[in-house]
Length: 290
Ligand SMILES: Cc1cc2nc3c(=O)[nH]c(=O)nc-3n(C[C@H](O)[C@H](O)[C@H](O)COP(=O)(O)OP(=O)(O)OC[C@H]3O[C@@H](n4cnc5c(N)ncnc54)[C@H](O)[C@@H]3O)c2cc1C
Image (cartoon, rainbow, N blue to C red; front, top):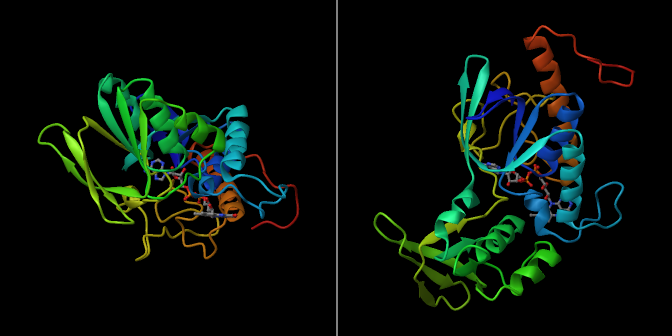
């Protein structure tokens, strides 16, 4: 997306998502000297669920989070700003877009010396749970699998926290309370047993799920909620570009998302230059174009 505003600042480009597509787009946009903001729930998205990527060119074997973290640092090196916030709405206002987002863990200080639940098993959940252990009196991490796929160092740090309990193979079936949260019901997905937990706060940190509903009123989408783009990854709404697994691309792979993120960022650059009456610097190395 281009020429967007948030509550605090005006950016040339706001990228939603900090995985292969978003971080590559951030690298290319910031290298074009565009003021670039990435709003994301996590770093790495789906790729952070695997420790074993063997098909990303240049890496014979690399952990998904490790690869994404390198992409993040590379984008930051060229000036991209990355914030851990969840986007809830995008609205078009003339030639600009207003992006609304919230930061889940920013509310954590309100739960000082209280009991909280963190839901999720990726790096965003592990980060949130670690942060919570420094603030809350008691932290319950709810994970629907029996092991974590996040970064090993973070998982070990997590397990050493005395005020943290990990509930493996579990999901939340109910959140209780009227005006405030008073507790949750957990269900063990193996034996279906139920456990009641008395807590004051619930933090959902399931980062990698792609939900594109917040742009559904602006862009053309398929019945499967995939965003339709052209070969420059422009959507039906001028100024909004989409790349990666959430588009109609038939193959969902990290290198494909990265490539699409690159094209989308360069197309956004050309769009902004045209909109602002400036001359785009030709980004090709030569050869046929059109
Ligand atoms: C277990 C597993 C193993 C895999 N192994 C491989 C492999 O070996 N090689 C390979 O090439 N591919 C692999 N893949 C596929 C690969 O992970 C994906 O193709 C790739 O991650 C897609 O990247 P993406 O940027 O399009 O989006 P995603 O990875 O889907 O990431 C979406 C990003 O958007 C963010 N986000 C979503 N909604 C919001 C919101 N509302 N506000 C802010 N941020 C939001 C998320 O936090 C995330 O950062 C694997 C996938 C899985 C699940």
